[in-house]
Length: 512
Image (cartoon, rainbow, N blue to C red):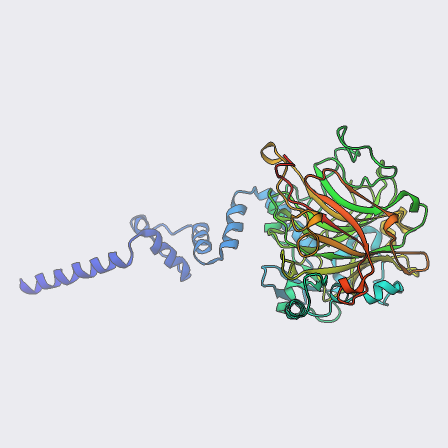
């Protein structure tokens, strides 16, 4: 009798210990799933039914995947099977097999894709295209540009080196010394792509799930109107730019004046200050870029090549500034896209990834970082090349265009935001640094050393009286142009030539 009582006591203790270790059936099920076994939960023991494999997978995702992936899984669970199938099909088209993949500290994955396998060559007009492997004839530098290439002009170092140089600059220069240090790309901390490949930012299901349409992913929204101004705006100057109108787009830009419209243009260059402006709406953006244009502003045949930096949470999933490009040959109706999200742009660089984040960025009252962008037409083969920080990135083949297959007629430089008037007031999305032009160096954003490429494939400084400026609402965003050739103000870099400060905070008491 005593022996039986002792055994019963030990059994009860074991059962109590078991209940403490396994307080719930879901934890038991999750542990079983984690071990790869198909064990029954408490209720299943009675009817001997196994756990659903889908439930086990869901538990595994919640237990072991990173929060970002869990968010993707949760979003995917609310999407129809048909849309998910379209997303997967689209990803298979644009994400080509990688020779090597590099995980960036900012969360991006950069795929090193064999140059001849890149998505850009899938364009119908490029079926027989041979990649231009010979370096194009680079535009001859003007005397001012050759001496002003320090910092943003020659970016041959990663972000760490840029930061070290910025520290040295801050110690050796005074407050009137205007010197910009080159900004680079964040993913370089993780390595580089091998020769014979091109660096492509991988597009993810998360990217496509943020898009309103898989078919329009990576494309600008169609304009509702061809008008630049509304009825309450100032009179439009003759031949003023009319690239993006309607849909709430606002600008602060400089553009080649009407008197120079008859002169063919074969490229443009500028050094652009890099910031990380705040974006109010999830579908908003802020960018700073140059435009190469030809065609009709009032029709559907406008050709445009664009490059600069952009902050777009909808497109990239974060608020980091990123190198971006865009092109169209029909006024943004059906052709072209951002970066490498559709065929057309042929990349040649294994070091520069379009769409990758730029670092470091400028800070108010602190170090200033800038990047130099050059777009020009190769006089031999007619392709439009992109250079970032003195390094060739790739080109837009001449076959993509109608008017730009010959030359450009207008160049623009400046900033752009989209105002959807959240809560019925002007957006608080910042342009540039989020500060007005009057605050000047170290606080306002800038474009410096504006140049164009002429028929002789030479860079020529743009005279200050050859450009005009435009801002739809100066109380929200503004722009001020200037000219400088004083070495004392630029650390011996040859001056900024024609330049301008621009930007603003958006919504404020004067911009309701």
